[in-house]
Image (tube, rainbow, N blue to C red; front, side, top):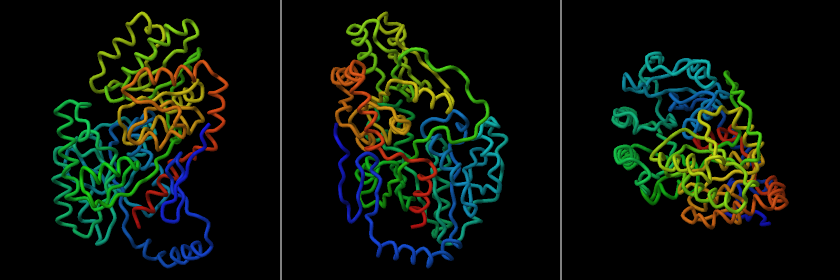
Length: 424
């Protein structure tokens, strides 16, 4: 068993398991911070801090991926009454002020179904801005043809606005073959233009921050935020009541797309079926259909060796997902490349071991190097996964190490950190 390593970064200690910076104990530092907070009190109260509400067309009790991030940022931001909101109106093609966020809160709770014709209108965002205002932008702007043009116009009219953009990943630039050419091209174009209007890049991992500096702007101001791992943190209606699996199973959460590397799991479970026979656990895949995944889904569900061992669930609610995490043997996340790897993070948050690939941000999440594998090597992955299945005592020992090596992070703590970065 490997204890989490720590590294010293300029007077702060960073935990390997979470990559979270923890200031060292220092009474002088504490006194300085307290004085600084008192001195900045009036300044912060006067500072306009704006949060973009984005990707809300996929909000509700079953969000995934980027919508899960933007929904949780919005939910947790509501605790700070002085914050103000705006969003990009896709029909009017402009940024507008949100006077009352109740409509968007209802979307998050599942009390309303998204309809673009019901979106609340508002005054022009540019008219409400004061000099020096901070704006957090988080939209997938490539999905809206006029978004970047309007952002440029906003910068010209309001040069004092600090534009801070949440960057999830640069996969479309690094690995364009994981997307269709049309979609990938739109994402690439948007990301490459972003440095023209962005003052600060809010990145969801150190891996993404490194990619921003390598591929977008060498001297970019990048900040890293640690996102939350608690899934069922929204009081949502329409809770899914489907029972969890009544058999031993391994869980894999993620959109069914080529980048998530379900093909590796097909090879692994095919070999497991041959080696373990009736003792082979099932593989439960949770995720919506995505890019270029039809062939592997067909193989998983039609190969006589795997068909009876694989179950695919779509549109799983937050409540059901938590139950699946708690009831599975362990989870697996073989993705080729991630901006973060939220399902792996959530698995550990709920105390379940996750066998992951060893690329991009996943080493920032997985505290156990022995449980990582090359995503292009299905034999290596097979060895790791078979060991966890055949050696329950070893699996149990890894589970007992999770509280010692993994520092759980809630969405509330995530937003508190994000807010401090915004006003810094």
